[in-house]
Length: 284
Image (cartoon, rainbow, N blue to C red; front, top):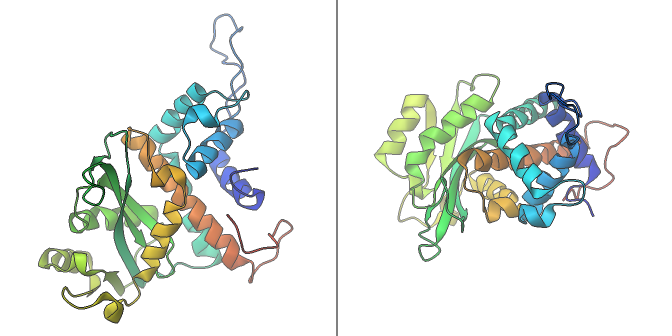
């Protein structure tokens, strides 16, 4: 059974293939011309998607068509080239042109997941008895579409990551922010430091106050909680075993691109018609 339905995998792969053209089957610079055939990028990409969705090790998702070493080598090349960020940027641009991003209301929040193998994005988790954990700070628009992600060790507080999060959002967008932007944040950001930052970048603060029950002042920040739940549905995000920061960022933005394209398809079903339009809203 495929890790993603074809109606969701094919748009992701088409955009990815446009960013990284297929290389020749044989390396033309090889002196003898008798080395191994190069595994097609699509085959490797299918295995990467399986590792992302199921969270399995590369030895488990490897097959006769693609070994675990090939997956690791190709991942390092793709991550170093920044293909995850570029793919997410293309997905955001397509969503903005067809549906439209709601940039007047944005929100951000952090989520802690497991990182049992340590690495450059791992730290002592304050919610898991000091075990290895990773934190990601995600900025979303008014409908929960992920705009930018910042990875950090689990023992980092959400508030210091807010500047990098909104900077990542700005770098992924292909146009400027609107004149009036409201940032909806939970009470973990209730500090003068956060308000000074929002004033510096021109955002209006809507921050929950400490000491007041959250349901009374939940506002419009619940969409980022839902986006964190969407991201945690990917096994590789929920339990990251990679140690390299570039590879981890590649997986984070690849998951964000899949979430964005999934929402694009679901919302476009009621506005557009195309030959491969899915017959159900349930795109897993």
